[in-house]
Length: 222
Image (cartoon, rainbow, N blue to C red; front, top):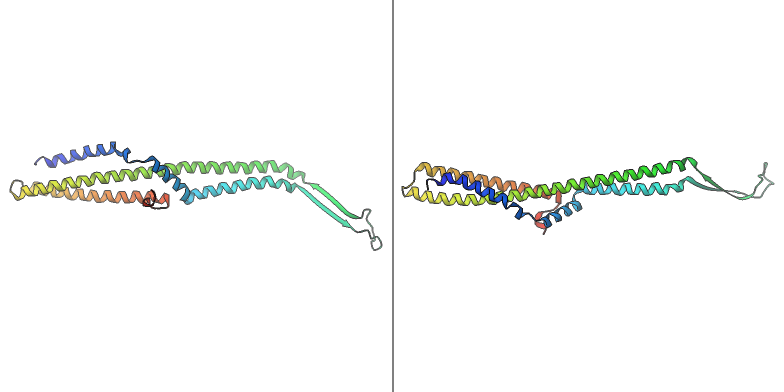
């Protein structure tokens, strides 16, 4: 039992290595894909990029439809009544006019090209942000899984230390162990309890950070 205190750090190192090796078992890629889809559906900035694409798409349609603006139709009605006219017109009745704005014709292709360019930029911005958002969701999800694994590890370590404290307390009461060794185990128990609280706090922070992107609680996502 005197060597138990010195074996605890070694036990933690071995347990940590095992936890790192088995971390991937806690990861569900199907669940992760669902989180990414929920993020894209709920996160405000994703909707902002979608709206920007929609606006530029409308700009392209508007630029194409503006071709009709270069044509202008007009008519003039001149009644056939020369008695009250000082300068009678040569033509009478309805007169139709058709005009074409040559300058507008030359400008339309460049305007449409510019609108299409703005649409392409908006789409690329959205695609770039989607990739960044996917990476961020994965990062926060993996961090959450890691923090949960650390919490389980430290929770198990606390139980082991509590068992060791109970054993050494019994030996101390029987006069088989020194007060120094007993105090060392109590200090170790306190340290492990504090580490467990820190680990629990890290889990809650990681969970909150992930839920920020999702717009809903993880408990509501099955």
